[in-house]
Image 1: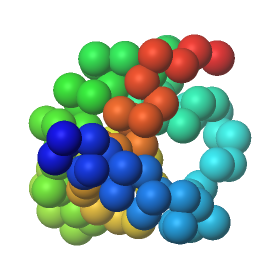
Image 2: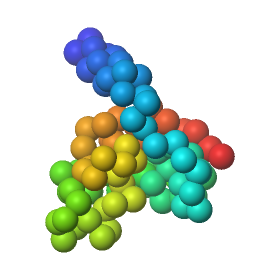
Image 3: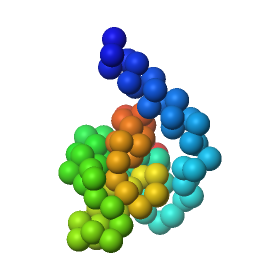
Length: 92
Ligand SMILES: [Ca+2]
């Protein structure tokens, strides 16, 4: 029950902040949550965000983790993780 509440709250926060999400189409990201650019949101994307969790712009990890910043706010945090989770299973 608590997990459902947390997921709902995260989903609500994402909807509230939806205008902040960068949905631009670049050569690398075509699908929101597709961190590795393979047109699928799957365990590999979730793992990348998990491994980069807490990394932010200016840190040494940023070179490898900037792709995990799905929300494009210069940090890899719960919103990036939630975005991948909410889009999990989607394909281009
Ligand atoms: Ca992917």
